[in-house]
Length: 464
Image 1: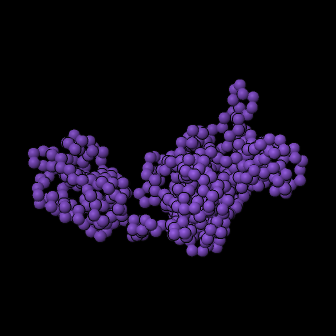
Image 2 (image 1 turned 45 degrees about the horizontal axis):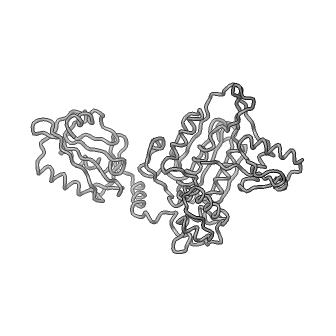
Image 3 (image 1 turned 90 degrees about the horizontal axis):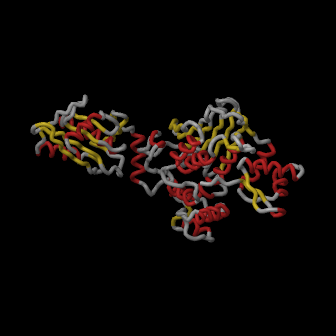
């Protein structure tokens, strides 16, 4: 760094990653801020620059450097810092103390942890420090990779395990199909010494109650824009992929499908209100990154007249802010084993890109950017529809019978007309049922397989 680059840096002013100190006379305060930088996104402390940004410099000698070295040793765990001396005038220099590796966070200085918020350094709350310390000291003792003592292979949904393996092979993320369930779980890294991990329970258990009430899903369609009156309210407990299907089905039932007419095109083009992939991405994020150690937690989907909110219990990983979610950021999966199963199945495309993908899909569809919020121990993504309605745009709401059909098809399996008829418990002409299915196929909700007497119907899977 030379004087010109130093002047450009100082011109930026103090920030979440930059602090000025008039001299090493405030070395203690500078190291407190360095500790805060180590616990955050990194940064630099400039000794020899006033708070107002005036570059004064100071005389730096061996005694100064020894004093700095002694204070750096007060950082725990030991931290590697860069020290750069920039000549400014005569014998005077500015000492730049910068952070490098921050992988051992949280750090303390003189036994106390610090954090940086905007341009202010303060003590880190004890609860936050203890939680971060737990994450650092016990990376192999996360909730998800603890053994599930009450569960055996017989307690898992083997059909879902086979689907997971088949999907992973189809995506090319698993080399060869595995027929033995326990070997499949080993491939998915969900067993340890032959014992199931809690991640395996979250991903595949057939019965979660009473041992895992946190594997829950809350679904609500409210009248208006407040939580005063329910139009539909459901609660489910199940493994993660079952909950994903139920949430997806609920959104398909209650979100309108809009049609538009383009010049020179005879047929109406039907589109869901929000991009289905954006909604699915938010659901997958909620299921993968929530804090399952909170027994009363759940994933929630709330549909209002003016918005959709998808929430999950737990805070953002330390070092990640709400603002980071809309830009390139490191991936900090709270449950990497569970997230890896979603990744292998093709439900996650690229680590750390999910929230950006949500934003991009919504903007491409003409909606405002979704809002991300962290409040009261949970993280929420809020989808807001565009206020603009193109000419000749109409909405199509499904009938109650059509919603029953969707609910019956939620297992993703192929069903013939007779099976669907029996499943929904309604006696009606086959042609009427077929018309319902054709309409829903036009709306992109279901798909037909085969032809003639062997034809069957199933819920249309969302493609990544």
